[in-house]
Amino acid sequence: MDNEHIKLAVIIKADKNKVKHALTTKNDIQKWNTSNVNLQDNILKLKYSNNIEFDWEIHESNDDIIWKCVNGPKNAKNKEAIYSLEEIDNQTKVSLIHNNWELNDDEMSFCFARWGALLFSLKNYLEFNKPNLLF
Image (cartoon, rainbow, N blue to C red):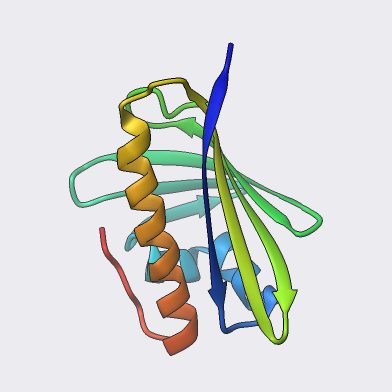
């Protein structure tokens, strides 16, 4: 089966450890993603204002933070969001790949927009140290 992926990137004026912390801890995630966050062991539960819920299993591998969807709406299950972190001149490049999309999946364009908004919410939170929730 052929697969597609969403690929986005952003430069954040913060060191890599701060970005990694923001992607892996409840206190930080609830300041840039959604306020309704539960993180137990390595399972991240996100609930949005429209009652859409996602459960992500979080893993770290070298400079990557991997969120694997273990529960979510429609065909979200088993998709992975891979955040690759690269420190460049006291800043961090965050490259996001959201993979395992089937060709011509109508939900892909909606997720593309949401991930873009979330990456900029993460950037604004880390650069200005203020909660920046969009959803």
